[in-house]
Length: 185
Image 1 (cartoon, rainbow, N blue to C red):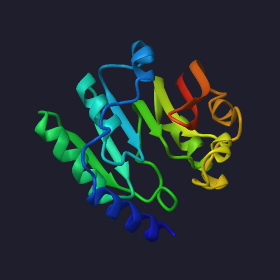
Image 2 (image 1 turned 90 degrees about the vertical axis):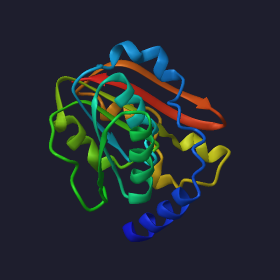
Image 3 (image 1 turned 180 degrees about the vertical axis):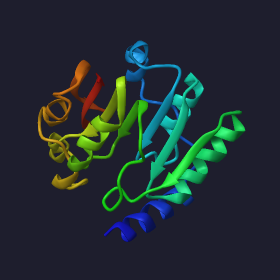
Image 4 (image 1 turned 45 degrees about the horizontal axis):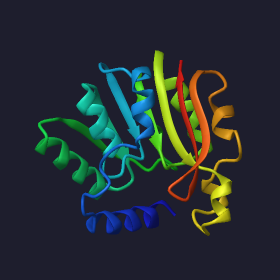
């Protein structure tokens, strides 16, 4: 399945226009919770909109994704802006997250329950985890993604129970049901 995922995302990113590279607006409201220095890991980085935002803040960023095409686009955009981001093609279903510790870990629009223990382990003490994932309420309006890739109500919050939650919200955003968290180790 991972190979088919890589092919799907590589094809999608080959058609990428650069639209939508700004971070979600809700991050502005919580930006004081997120460090400006240190190491950051952007999980399922895609074309790097979060990686770029983190690099602009002054963090040293490692972007991981199954698609090398997406990662190359992220790296090119960062270089064009005068930033450096490190990239690592990674199949999260078959490989572990890179070793930490990290001061910031982001995971947006990717839900894989079994990586949460790794996320918590790779956060430095006082490190911050920031995530936005689709919830099962999304199925009320959309047939995809399937249930496997959607969080149950309050499941993201439960995954962060050993962290100090600074912000948590479940809401509808642009016709998508989302759960959002900012939590500190």
